[in-house]
Length: 99
Image (cartoon, rainbow, N blue to C red; front, side, top):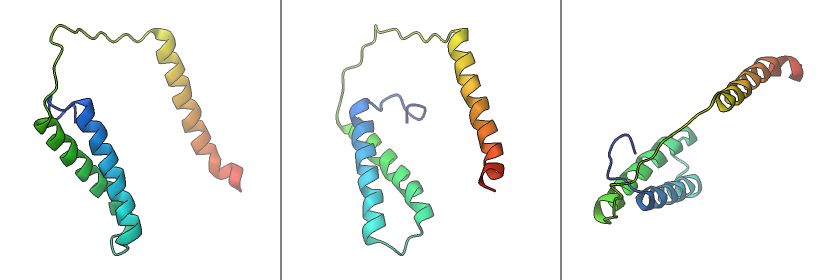
């Protein structure tokens, strides 16, 4: 949502995700005709629509002077890369472990 529009704010996103999860629960309990694979896609659409609707109707103040700087050091990148490699190796070896 942050990529699609700059007007989406945290309140809209939070309300959207709650409504999306509740919609998924509704599909699970009351609409068995819909294949479970589609629940997440429909929940995502509902989340985006509700978040955008709330964000466009409820106005929030924007901090124009706020500057956000992201920093990723070599240590953090190395840790994330090590976890990634560990997960890939575990996933590859999982069939051998289960046999």
